[in-house]
Image (cartoon, rainbow, N blue to C red; front, side, top):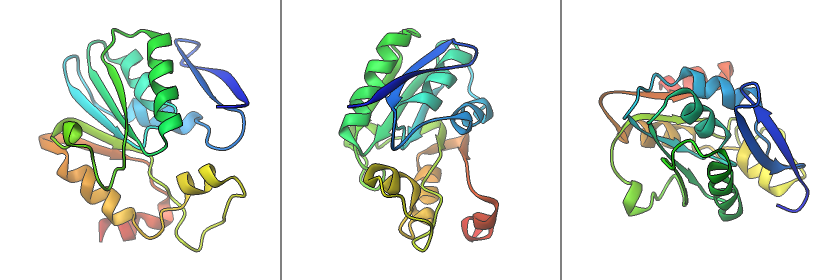
Length: 174
């Protein structure tokens, strides 16, 4: 990440280095992590983890949960692993470079909790001039696939938690 900032979450308990421009985590990542009802020992996966903020907030809140993140941008996946090492919540966080729509074999399994903040603008949505931000925000008509993949990776009795714009709830429920 060329121009980066170091941001603090959860009153400084989580420190995340992230791009100064483009894709950035904020309050939505903290709220997503807070909504995941994980317990110590649970295995979780974040689909589209970016710099790892939501996963690291979850790891800070729930001791001894195993957090895996999948991120299509290899630079962001590497940054998330750097952020995990810097925060040192017990070396139970791992971020994988891969595509949510074609999960790497080692994460193509079921998890107690699956969570994500998928791209939320439809194809006609507002475009960002920053290519990485545009890819992170626009779903290209694939929100249903995000949801289907999340549900498929959730164990029976587990949870699937996502952030979704209210105007897309009907589409998601369909």
